[in-house]
Image (cartoon, rainbow, N blue to C red; front, side, top):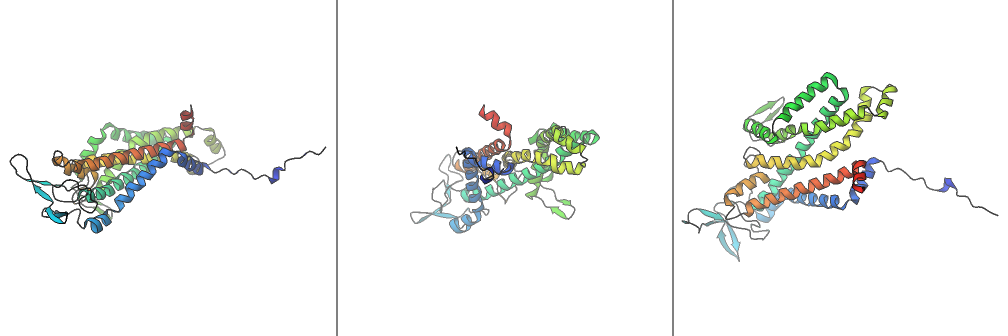
Length: 342
């Protein structure tokens, strides 16, 4: 009787895809995360197209006053700022949404400027400030958390007390205080000069105030990793601190920082909008979603779309970032996947 034997050498070996490729595959399989990423790409692309929209579609400067401007209705020019018909008839009202992309799609503000153009320009600044400040926050928090958690002792005590000082202040109160003091100041930091109203100032302020909220979890994770068997085995093999940090600690901390990045971007965008709404964030003539909302406060009863449009965009972007961050967390954290399966 002939028996057939499987030639093991002829079967293709299953290759391990690696943790990062596996995580990316899991993210792509998460429909909510993919949908959120698509929404973010659409918002980012639209905001990047702000100069093209203002110059080639509206043919208006989004930052200059347009009090005497006109728009066309059935070929007939009409003023952008209409005489008020309520009360004593004093003052003017900007036109409302026309829903024509080339003709004040979302209407005008009290300076006659196109709301859609300012919405797109404001999104550029809000997204940039939120993302860059989140990167700064995660880098600083990762550095402080890893150093404090790994070395411990007096260094940990000093760094932890510094985090406690920042933690003791309510985050918005601290942001407002720093913004009020620094927003109109001129700072010389070595070869770099930050002028009054520079967009770099809110980026630095927001990036620093949230460091304790990210550094503490990183510190705790580093202290846990330091006691793990594979780290102790490396110590026993004579590995230096630099090698342990580079090969054992940082690769295990990095996924946590990646998960924090989209979540902190959403939080930082909301903080920037709050500061800009209070006129201590992005300064004129620049725009952000917070400044556009501030422009629409006085028009809530007559032209509410001026304030509603940036508020809706801010909410959609924040929700999309949070959902995408949840998808990344599920892909990078095996325990989260197990909890979801139970």
